[in-house]
Length: 251
Image (tube, rainbow, N blue to C red):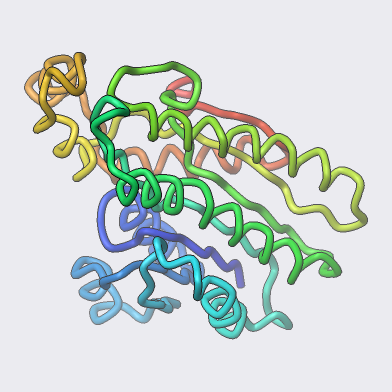
């Protein structure tokens, strides 16, 4: 059995990734505050290997317990591979930095950076003696490489995750049974996050009209399209270690 642990499966890209993997017969462990209606319907219609763990990723205090619950859902004797996909993320606050309050900044860095770093650390620690295909895929963004006004928190958190991916990859090259690390930018997807961006103020984000045009001109990928491409790229680059990939390079 191939196991996939995915954060943020209640909607958007995380939901689409979970559905694609369930369709392929893999065991998906979804972590999100609420369960997706689409996934729940799929599980009712078809015998799926699905485990949902309700959790708010912004709650750092209980993440160790969360990871123990995740590992308790895995039959290690039957596991052929285990993959952690750190997908959950927020684009907010979409504001120039002096307008951002402490809570907004803390939440952005916790969800986008601190929580996935901690979960990756626990993943590697728990599996370090196991000889199997082990991967961590961090969902990245072009915003981690290019600065945008109004996105100082989002750009910074994604840049941090890209560098984290590269650093841990170097560490894993020195181990007997390494975890493969990958950061993958999925392109521009028609998700709730895009809706948040389109409703931002021009004084806070000067490129808001550009994102309105993406929607108006049909330039956004559907979550399903993006999920399929991500899974294809993950297989193409199966042996990559520490790569920062963009699925638009494979379209």
